[in-house]
Image (cartoon, rainbow, N blue to C red; front, side, top):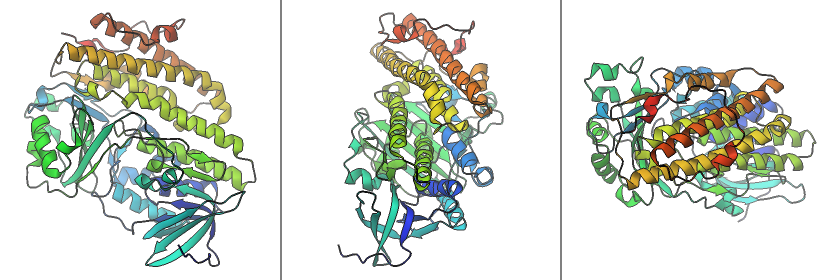
Length: 549
């Protein structure tokens, strides 16, 4: 490829390939930390981008939400131009038209730590405007054609095409935020098969869809205060799949179906007509709502085998990956923006150290180890677990466990500003490792519990229940405590106490599972729990969560 040498002014400190959510957020975070750094963002699309029918990844959870609102200072935009999320909500409604007679899990009121439903087009347009206002060189309509990596401290070179002309950019740091294109991941053959085989289809429609409109039962509608189920990330669940409903501030609604590839093949839903026929079989009440011509279809897309690992995300040779250009877990629990927050925080720390003439070799190794451990600890939550999605006995227990693990260990690092604090991370390393081992063993136990239920063809033990997470006092308080301002010693003590609560919960779940299936293997839980003590005299979960027929 013939690319002319860079004209005057084409060198930069950081070149970010990809100006979507991950790349623009990184640019803004770098600008906060390094006000004099030269930052260039190369984005394939032209701006402004369309609202609504643009990208998925619209639901945020605590880490990503806190990163956007507090780290990047975008809370006013989120409050004024996006939708405050009414938590996750789950309906065990496979094949059911009577949504108000199905078991429902969610919150009756907002939990303390906020999150939002994000219209990606609107959000990225705002990020682009802020980047330009901050003096970041955002170049849109640019297609990257070649990446040449510098050796022995030499600059990297990016060859790109814009308006039919070729250009070149030299950069000390090269960050791949190109999304699924994964330019550096593919260049260095970094993709790892993580054993989680799942597919997704999604589309947007005009107008909002409100589950409260699906019932005339005033008592059912009044379970939530106010009755704003439409603002939740609503999950309609069945064995091997979940269907999402996410409202967007631009007035559209995002829909999707995510499936275990073996249980629900992609070929049965890879067009809008097929997806609607699938919904009529599995989630007829949603399908009937979407048949209303007022909900005109805006787009449709699908993705096979979306989950993958990545061998490396940070390099001492001054390159890094962020967002879907690196590893991707699963859309369940919406962890995408969480891992953007984590990767961008580590990249910002590395760039700042490097431009300050500090050695980054040791820090790269430590941040890489931390990032990969966070990914590895989260993977068992998803891999092999989609069969539980239709189990109204086990999935509610799993949901409480998964939230507890997340709020106990990973989320406090973001809220406390400790993600890159190596001194604190060193002090809590044993707690993180023990919690990760507990989680892996618990996920195996939950899987086996669900398998045993499936063999016995267990039905919903008490259909029509409302499992209200808001009313679990310790659970509600744990969410609220994320925002506590703690000094280093108090933070370390909090993580230790969180680990003890996890151990107490694990002890209770193990006992409950064996009360139903005495022969279940413990997968090492008894050894991990040996010697742990509990200050919780009362059960951590209300008896309604164990309403076993």
